[in-house]
Amino acid sequence: MTTESSMDLSFFLENFFRASHLPISCFEGKSLINRGAHHVQDFNLPMLLVSCLPDDLPPVWYSFTPEYMYFGGVKEEKENRLFFIGPVLMNDCSKKQAESILHRIGRTRKDLSLLLRCFSDYANCNVSSLIAHLNLLYYILNSRKPDPIEILDFHWSTVFPSVFDSSVELDGTYENQLENNLMSCVRHGNVEKLNQIMNEYVLFADHYAELKSTSAIEQQRSYILGANMLASRAAIEEGIDFDLANTLSGHYINEIMKASSNTDLSMIFADSFRKYTSLVAKLKTMPGQSPLASRVNSFILSHLYEKITPSIISAHLNMNCSYLCTQFKANTGKTISAYIRECKIEEAKRLLECKGLSNAAISELLCFSSQSYFCSVFKKITGMTPQEYEFSKN
View 1 (tube, one colour):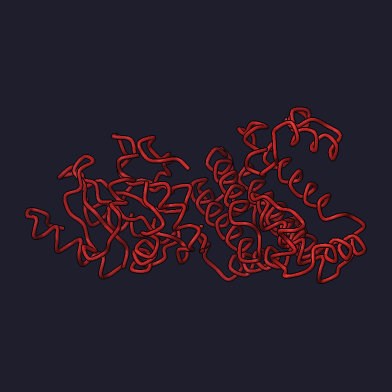
View 2: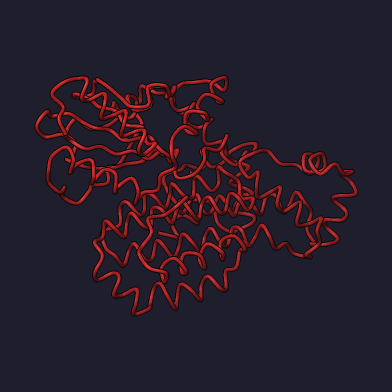
């Protein structure tokens, strides 16, 4: 590519966007000098993302934000410029995801429709496609193949306010069929079938052992990152609360990024799918199997990070609260209030296992009236204090 004039650069960026429908920008240092898709209101997302990156970047790399925006960059060695692709999403942007992004960059809900329109103007892009575009772009700019692409850890800069698909696919029908079977297990909450697939085809199969011996760890890491996003999205579509699935997905992303061997990655892969599947299974199967109990169960599991009471549930279901409570207990043997506490403590246990969260933080996240009440309920249900439970899992 010839980039001797701004006219050449503009021509290249514009036509790259027209060909790929992926946003592309060019930076000198951290200063934006040109970009494709000039017609798109992108809220300066490329600039905001680049400002959060280290000054010394690899020749070719990619990363992603906690809101599941993916992006990557290529150094043009001759001109010492950064060509930045993104941000892009694996799937259509949901309202909740857009709200999360706006909150992170200091925008308000009034910009929601503009941000949704921004991402609708871009193509959805999975990790494998993003990597392919980055490798091709590097070859065009530098006239040689790049070294293996690096995954960068991303953290939003503190100057911004604090407050999800396709995976990287392996070639061949075998892997595609395996992926379809795994995703089917997640969507239907079929834990038994999932364990059978994991044991026979993923963790202990000769085929998978061969795959591990011939695949670079970074390729496997990319595949499992994409699979984690797929499973998280499927769980959300089946009714799992967005924030719950988002927190769980973030936990597994951290574990995937820290893993240093193929064996560790395989175990994380299996554990993540089992967790998403068990969540959906619990949502779909309720003691007593009555449609009413299942509807109550679905509402509770979809609102774990909110205040939940029998009156709130009855209002949502448009039913008399006294009648609802009586029927639920007759079908399950439990009161609605007791079941709410059980579900919230089950989620608290998972949060404690993820580490890094205090009792106060978990209590607030799960909308307990106080930290002391949370600890009291936790001990009553589990027989241990939160600290004792966390210690038992270490």
